[in-house]
Length: 128
Image (cartoon, rainbow, N blue to C red):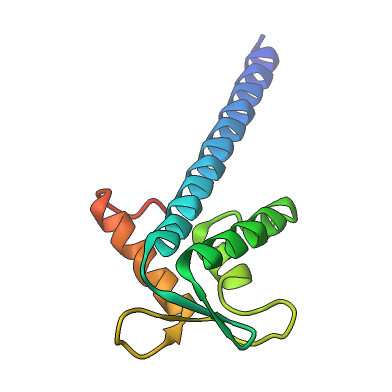
């Protein structure tokens, strides 16, 4: 009887961990989408491979990169997405930049991390 109880408890714990991991992945995907939406609706410009693009064009580009990286398991958190997809061109290796209003351009990784922090603070705390 003890062995059966132990097995059942193990199975239930395993199922609970899968459910938790799935919820965390959904939360991360939601956060990444929200982060990219912030960029897309901003008046900021996004520098990629020698050209400045609108925030909306940058959002579309980074959504494609996110989908690819997510399929490869390389964007399981917003931070991982920023590191693996939002930092530099995978074609040229050139760093992405963001320029808002009259401010000097800054590395996209820095801008995305700042926006992520602001998003989380508005939502009541760090999600990851």
